[in-house]
Image (cartoon, rainbow, N blue to C red; front, side, top):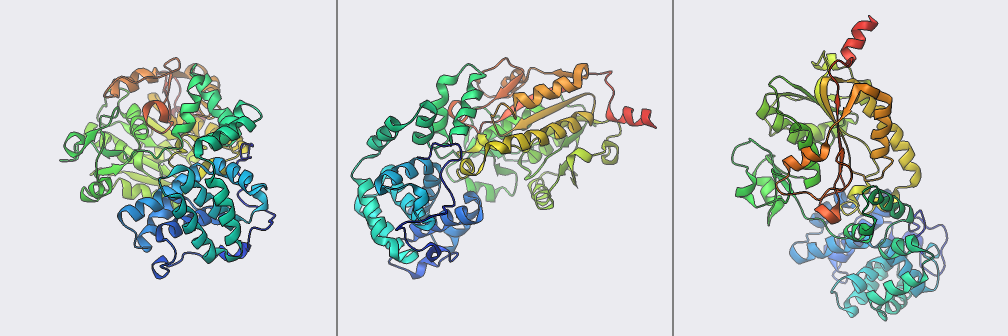
Length: 502
């Protein structure tokens, strides 16, 4: 079963009757030259293989593979659904495959297991006819693992004898407990199920757990943002306004719209938009304010902050540790006619005076490195890669960064601590520990009131108002966490401490 803490076994160490392990490791294949194999299925298989063997990210790899294979329209859509759908439902499909094959998945060669996952997804989660799902997958097996073609055919025919609802019922009946049941039927590692349950318990909404897990398995809407104040790019004139973000919208052909507006329109989740606006609109902007985006890459929130800073007469500095991501930040802000200095360096070793803010920054966004458990619908392979140990490592990084950010605030300055994870250790745990360290120098703001004041319509938020947790099942956004903290006036800033030390 896949409901264990680590999720499905992504790198099997043993095999039994599953075909040749090396047969599928040949890199990208020119599917246009092989008419016996569906090009869309071949692209999906190639991406699944790359995700498994090279730790690739499907959202980065798939568009290029689709283009190289010459897929368009329905074929491109099929490749996309097979790739993302298989990755999202991997835990459930592995449990189905294990029962249908009569052996655990770690006894099936990894390339063959990928074929079975692809075929099972077609059989149980798409409208592809049974004969096409089986025959096309077997044809693909003849090319990438020919010795296993008969095995693939037999297992998929066994899978096809039972419909999806009955398979889920069987798996649920065999589960050890409720966590295991949700893990296998909703395709999440058990440790993530427990973490999401704890996050909902913090709001008194644990009854929403099943809806949250299922929302992670649904393709997200492509949200767009029209950077405010930049000419004719206004949400109402470009598409259907988003439910909550005043600068967000959806449109029928999003990528064409992005290309046509040369950076003034961007793809950005509505939750990310609200996180940046929570800082820029927490209070009126005074001309000359100094702002800092401490962990800026890849630059989506930086671009929105730049547009807001331009409109209000503020100055923005962006910091990014990784040079390649810093370059992405520069590209993201290129459409905004504001001179934004992009620093490349460690955010914990930042001197505000060297960045033109000798008295500290008036506003700082810390979009902290995190597990990304709030974006599992968007990055489906992440749930199978993350481990519980990652949380401890990341919370230590978050603690160092949040202390550095608070130290860089001017008296009266506001810090927005943001994560794309609802894990309570990364959200309430990190901010509560920081507030304890900072003592009376810090004042936690009513973040919910700020975000509700920004939102275009009422937001259903849990908790006590001091923080905001957005949810895919409730708000249609990534699970963004936002906490606003102000350095009290009279509290010593980093500049004042430096002067005292001299």
